[in-house]
Image (cartoon, rainbow, N blue to C red; front, side):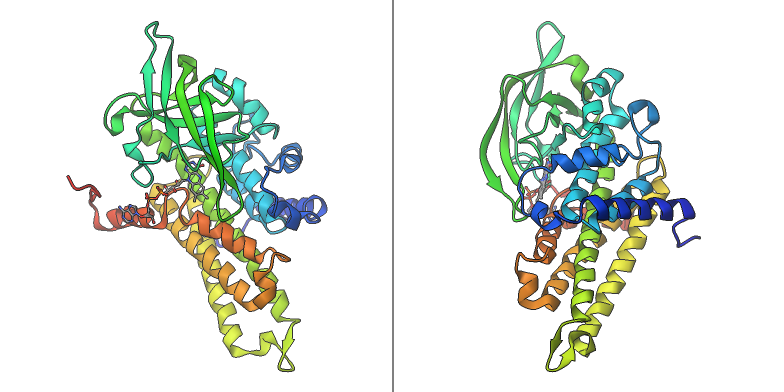
Length: 384
Ligand SMILES: Cc1cc2nc3c(=O)[nH]c(=O)nc-3n(C[C@H](O)[C@H](O)[C@H](O)COP(=O)(O)OP(=O)(O)OC[C@H]3O[C@@H](n4cnc5c(N)ncnc54)[C@H](O)[C@@H]3O)c2cc1C
């Protein structure tokens, strides 16, 4: 068993940190408070080979591993937390599902511009009546009479990036039950795609309800047809690891700021670092950060170039989500009024980490899954 990064991984991580320090450090605070997507960062990271890190060369990727992509997200977040979202969007979420399961035509149409940092893809799973119970989704895909396509009708909520995305990987129902669920790629410029009123998350990111009103999708743009749900969710575990990595990285970012602060801020004539009440906070934070890191690296390393294990992913995500939030929150406490102010990124880290405890499979839903693994049986959450 090896608990250290190897030489190549260390060099890669250090190179990304160096790059981020040169190009992303200066505007980090400003970027975090802007609601729009950082397109300049997307192009910059694409040029540096940091989008599609673990994708195949023939797809425009760089042939790396999932662990490399995790290292990139951590390295970028350590300098500019907001820019880590671009690493996520270009490596972990629906883009990875498209790269793994998409046809040549689908990749030609969408993947290339995504990897150039010129566009972004959203995932539309959640609906007003189907959140945690995602398999209750009602958005339908009905075959057209000529058999050349499907018509999509339904509503999605909380779809990250949807406003400016070129394409939404949309979960739809071709028939009844879990087996009837699949997914389609919907061009956001298609006739019948409509956005509702803009709303903001606590993180400052904007979202809007997305309405599909008889949207035509040609058969070639069906990603995973009827029966595709399980494969789709297997791909979604990559998104979960990106979510976990950002939680951990933002917790660590806030921790580092608090550490520096405690070593220079004096009260009662002494450095904050000299008060035992704060020393124990640092010890607890460090234990949580290290433990989360090991769980995250286990899930990513075991996946190598494939998809991560559902159980290892769930365990890593729950622990990283809790750690990120708790550590960032304690860091804020250590910085006092300065931490609560928008003059540092600590309060931003708290707000962002809070959302990841809900997004991508909430802590409770993932714990249900972990418990099923422990007890060796499934427990229906339904009344019948
Ligand atoms: C920042 C952010 C970004 C998001 N981005 C996207 C996106 O890009 N695409 C997308 O499709 N969706 C996205 N979502 C939506 C997200 O997937 C849902 O919010 C999530 O699945 C929970 O659904 P819900 O909000 O409807 O809560 P509900 O399902 O109503 O749950 C409410 C609470 O009850 C708990 N709960 C529910 N069922 C159980 C159970 N059986 N046992 C124990 N506890 C339970 C939940 O954990 C939660 O705490 C995003 C959400 C957030 C916060």
